[in-house]
Amino acid sequence: MTLIDGAEFLTGPTLARHQQAAWRTQAMHVAQHSWFYRKLWEGRIPPKDLGDLPSLPLSDKHQLRQSQAAHPPFGDYLAAGRDTATRLHRTSGTTGQAMNLALSARDCRITEAVGGRCHRAAGLGPGHTVVHCLNYQMWMGGVTDHMTLEATGALVVPFGVGGTELLIRTIREVGITAISCTPSYPAVLERVLAEKFPGVKPRDLGLKLGLFGGEAGLDDPALRERIRGTWGMEPRNANYGVSDVFSNFAAQCEHDTRLHFMAADVLWPELIDPESGIPVPLVAGAEGELVLTHLVRDCQPLVRFRTGDIIAVNETEPCLCGRTGFRFRVIGRSDDMVVVRGLNLFPTMVAAVLSEMPELSGDYRIVLDGPPPYDRLPLQVERAPDTTEAAAADMPDLAARVAAAVKAKLGATAEVTVLPPGTLPVTEGKTRRVIRSDR
Image (cartoon, rainbow, N blue to C red; front, side, top):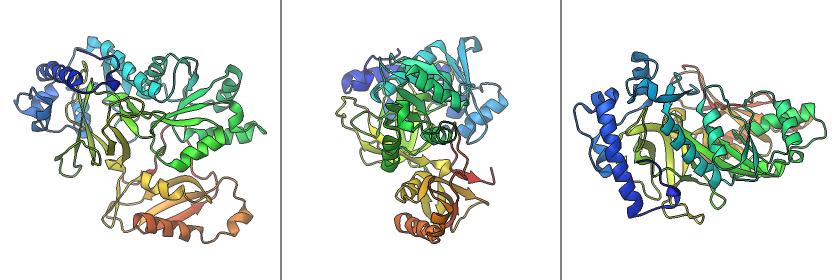
């Protein structure tokens, strides 16, 4: 029991029968071979019906970290012999201990096929030449996402990170038409263009399609419009995934900027209240933490795994593109949430406020110097790139206006520091917006 060709367009009895049959096979595999879940379930037999999954306890990243620490390198949730694994990845470790990820040949094929669905939905296909600018050094976003790009039939250039000047020359010389990277990476390219290629504008490179992932921010219409205006390319949220589960299983299409869930034949989604763990019905208008269960996975199958991502489900009806998966947006990560006087704030909410102020670059950091509780939001922002010192002198109240906007839109009191353009570091990898001194 593996993939269904075109599963992203299916609904109804055919898909449901496949899901139930896949789960029965997977449940037996996990119960027999995953010591981690055998201990967690305390002798309970996994239910045969997916609708009864909430009878099983949740699992989370902290438990997986403990498992790998006690049973290196893959943890006792490795449910197949080591000789079954054909690829090893490692998570970026941006939110804690890096994790070792083992995939069988079948796990790799399924991962690549599902990711291919996502990139095709976002507009990539035969005729495109796409440069892939994510880290190839063990991170799943490198070689695995490269393979998902190839699954679309596009010509893929495996560039990775570093060597931005060489990248710019390569884009111009090869005639590259699409780029796969984080949403913050175009800002790096813009700075290098300005410094090393005077007279060359971003739109002169000829990129037509931007396939973004790895960071939040692309839900902001202002950022999309800025990319279109500066680069002349269409920005697409093309690569949403959870490394421990699937490299990429959701993306937008040309008709809807919200993420489409693309993996219904191999991945079962749930929502829970992040505080209580109580299930939340997955219906239009629902919000909660995304919980995922593998329906097909050999090496490290996960059951009722808490992703830490808080999502809002917008639509459950089929899209104009014909894809039937529910559509959603990511509100933020539970570990990036900052509580200020009882208000739950996520970086994406702050970004939406800052994007409405043309005096700012849009880059920011929330710097937390101590443990909670917090009565103010410590916020560092940058002036827009073209702001001269003379112009800056004409806006002495900028910090106060930013604080007032945060107060009006989010209800929180912000302590704002305005920095000169280019002060905050830009990176080719993931950009951390919330900096905690206690981590």
